[in-house]
Amino acid sequence: MNLPSVMGHECSGEIVAVGEDVKNLSVGDYVAVETHIPCGECYQCENGEQHICQNLKMFGIHTNGCFAEYAAVPAIVVRKISKNIQPEVGAMLEPLGVGFRAGMDMQVSGKRVAMIGCGPIGLLAIASIKALGAADIYAVDIIDERLELAKELGASQCFNSKEIDVVDEIMKITDGVGVDAFIDASGNVHAINQGFKFLRKGGQVGLVGLPSKPISLDLGSDVVFKEAKITGYHGRKMFETWTKMLNMLSNKSLYVDPVVTHVMPLEKYHEAVELLKQGKGSKIILIP
Ligand SMILES: NC(=O)c1ccc[n+]([C@@H]2O[C@H](COP(=O)([O-])OP(=O)(O)OC[C@H]3O[C@@H](n4cnc5c(N)ncnc54)[C@H](O)[C@@H]3O)[C@@H](O)[C@H]2O)c1
Ligand SMILES: [Zn+2]
Ligand SMILES: [Zn+2]
Image (tube, rainbow, N blue to C red; front, side):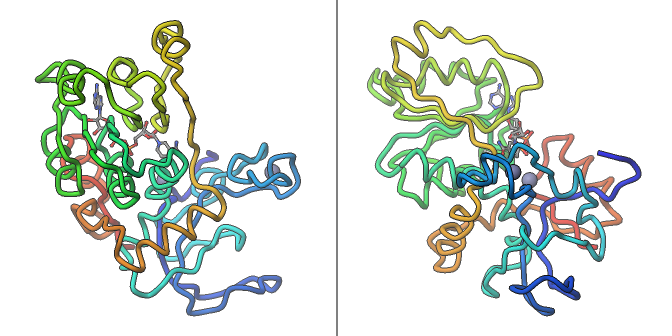
């Protein structure tokens, strides 16, 4: 990020002007923003993986972002959305797409899935895998308020791993088998290792959280002998994830409203950051 810069990459809004070469967008369109700006020319871009473009630029990091009344957004990442999606939800489509994509890719329908980390990313993933038909969702976090939201969004059972032995508990409720899959949205090394312990043999792992440093895993017993299938997910498929997620939000089979815990004017961003530091609230919507 080159400073000074306007931060913010998750938003919804209305188009007030379009560049002269832009054909598919018009003034007045109601839109949200995909953050991954692809180059359109590299190997990945030419082979259907523009979301992991080799020259990926991020809206709000490599460009000015959306913590402002007006934002300039490259047309390639602007998505028109239906008017029946509230602006607060529209602003969460980008983070929602991460867990939604993991859930789609992992084919969670009918499975027992543990969700590690119930920050906004984890909570939106819970809502997604619930909507995608997971049989049971076990939510793990170390903050009770977040676990309460997890319950509201469809978790069948919630575990505060500061208070109980989460590996023991999950093994118990799965009759000693372990879960079919876990998704990590904590980025916490200890929690990820616990996940591998309560994962069943042949199970799947979806990695979304970003640990701050390299982590160590017991590859022999937790991956090779277990035949664990591990996949990392960076953002959304462009634009398959958006299309499916928007379909399910529009017909109300995907419900994410409780993730928005506060709405405040942009000027109060200090207060918002303070709340999050204290582990209070989830998505705080800032209105410019
Ligand atoms: N892969 C992607 O495309 C992508 C996109 C956005 C964010 N991320 C990453 O996803 C992660 C989650 O993002 P977020 O915005 O929800 O962050 P967050 O910090 O709000 O959420 C992390 C959650 O993990 C919980 N946690 C911490 N230690 C734990 C432990 N030992 N056991 C269980 N839970 C624990 C925290 O209490 C918190 O609720 C971050 O690492 C973020 O960088 C990845
Ligand atoms: Zn590219
Ligand atoms: Zn984001």
